[in-house]
Image (cartoon, rainbow, N blue to C red; front, side, top):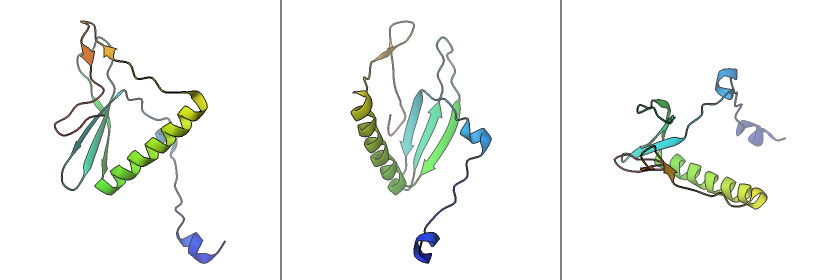
Length: 107
């Protein structure tokens, strides 16, 4: 490996507590002129309150790179496992539970 390739490598470390992951079934996306904010939330049935479990702040460029990477990975996943079906989630009163909401965006 040449020196130029070695200088472009990043040593990414995954700590054990982070490796466990955090479950989320709702993403709230907002943005300003300089950043995108993605709040990951876990909603539990029958519980009216939900806390943000994690917040990720991205530059617009990184948000677009993330979108493209997700699109690519979803395409690869679906080519192996079939189409991912998106069904409406219904609450206890039959109301549709949104997948995301926020003043400037949703997911």
